[in-house]
Each structure stands twice: as structure tokens, then as C-alpha cells.
Length: 196
Image (cartoon, rainbow, N blue to C red; front, side):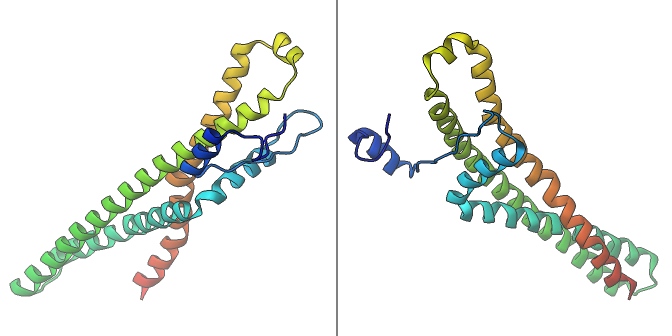
């Protein structure tokens, strides 16, 4: 069945316009199996429609990771004031400065993490819906014999697993990989700065 815009109904065209839905054309593979590269390519095709949101999520996650690395330096300054022989007024000023900077950076860190969480939830909801539609469009093109010889429960489980795999991958990238990369880059920079 051809699904060109001319053969779609008005309701389908309206819903695609309303939710900014786009057709995603996938190539059939010879063996019928998808490898990791093909799945990541499908994810990228869908992510291209939400690049500003992706950039926002990655940016605020990077900001939160940098703040998480910088805050302990202010704790170091806080405790160094107690070990120093400064006058009472100078020590009080430095202590209040360190406490104020820690509080301010913690608030910015919290806001950045909330923006990252909300953006990731919105993106995951949109992506998982698009993946479900894409998987259903792929499965519906199979022959009647395929559905009679395949256990429907396992087919539904595979489709759900395909949809949820994006959510697990996105969570891993945002909560583990990006902070780890930022940490590996920022620690040498901080060590060089404080070695002077």
C-alpha cells in the first residue's frame, strides 16, 4: 500500500501537521536483522528533527557537570581559610564569599539538572512515540503468513524492547557518558590551574 501524501486521509494529514510528524523511510535489509549501526542510524534520523532540544540537553548537562567539578574548589578555599593566619575580618569575608559561591553554584547546578531532566523526558516521549510508529509501519508490511507463524507476544515484546532501548541509551549518554567526558577534560585543567 502506497502511503504518499495524496493517498492519506485528511485526518492523518492533520494529525501529522499538528504533531509535526514526518515520514521516516527505512531501507529493508537483506537478512531481516538490524545491527547496531542500523539502529543508531534510525535513532539519528529521528533525532535530526529535534536538534535544538538535543543541543539544550547536552549543553545544560555539560554546565551541570562543570559546576559539579568546580564546587569542591570553593570548599577547599573555605577550609584553607581556617588553616590560614588571616585577620578576623579578612577570614570572615573569605568564608562568606566561599559559602555564597557554593550556594550560587549549587542553585545553578540544580536548575541545569532540572532543565536537562525535563528536556530528556520531552525528547524521550517524542522519540519513543516516533519509534513505535516506525516499528508498527515496518511490521504491518509483513505478509499474513508471517503473522500466522510468529508468536504475537514475542513480536510485541521485541517492538517494546526496540522502543525502550532508545530511552536507556539516552539516559546512559546524558547521565553517565557526558559527565564522564567533562570530568576527564576538566580535572587536568583544574589541576594545572591550582598548581600555579
